[in-house]
Length: 88
Image 1 (tube, rainbow, N blue to C red):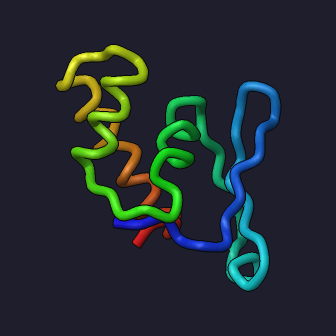
Image 2 (image 1 turned 90 degrees about the vertical axis):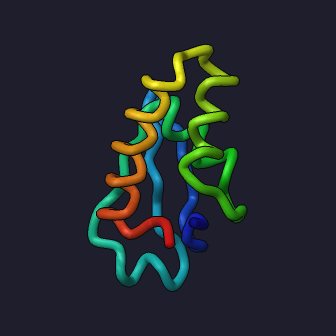
């Protein structure tokens, strides 16, 4: 997988918003809200090839959570990102 180009992550206090810019903005009809851990993962893999295991490892290393919790969180996150069409 890879993050789609044309999106910029912006901070709004403790929340993060992914905003489409340039040509991508013409097709974007909503903003994507992310919490701190989702924003951390987005920044870590932006413009890089990644898979679920990459994200799981990043979560475990950053937050010290169990593999099972990280796996569940990543599955949910990837489903959200796929529905939002911000990864391919």
